[in-house]
Length: 337
Image 1 (cartoon, rainbow, N blue to C red):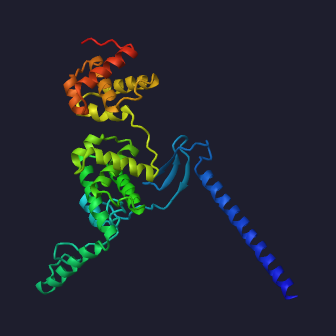
Image 2: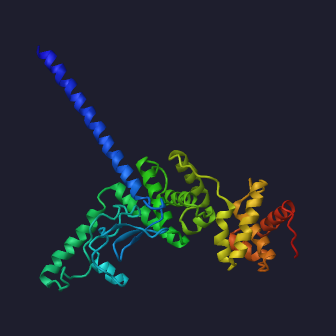
Image 3: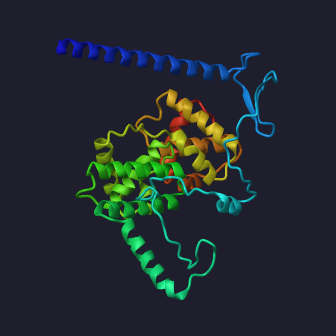
């Protein structure tokens, strides 16, 4: 009898569980339908909805219908007119970042001997504050892994600054390096070499290409070691990196040569035609990009010499000469020298 009651009780629990799951699913579906309806104008069906924050209204940008009014502004309740005011009135710290070994979540005791009200701290308490500041610096790096990360990420930041790389590339490089540390790929290799390889991989991932020679100039290791380490970590971390396109180099090279946007557009057009005819495969992307820019500069009346283009692209004049002859011949481009 007890067994039968136990079975019935378990069946009841199962039914209740299934009912609650079905109910939750229906409620979620209702919420999704409601959100989809809110995203559409009920009058004309347009998705062009504009938030008018001065009047606290949601307005259709096509027909002008006021869909919602008196909605809550989720922004800050204070106003700031310059950067200093914004930093003083903000009650939160900097966002989390992978470019710092503790992700920017640790605290720091300020070097100024002042309290929260801005008053100067007495000389009697300054010795205690000095000791607190010293121990705060020490406990930020607690073990060997954090010491490794602290040194490597500062090295990454130094190289990225020297190359003028954006914030996204630095964050991506830091993530790649952290993955390498987690998989114990650092053992037996120099920290500088793995950091340089991670930065090179991040440049490839973010479509902000830099050559191995450029990475070598700002790093403390050789080009050979960077390439070897890059191949190793990309294989072990299964990084899906496509071959670098010559088009990615065009904006940087044109900027270095002070060429107009017309030349840049023409260079991209030439490279796309070359890619369709498979003239770029098996050739260095920097050389092909430099040759396309050289041709475009002549066609657009802003001629640059082969020496000038070669210096900016980091290739030889012979490479540009060979590539531009191939492109001009295969694409039927008439160049008047």
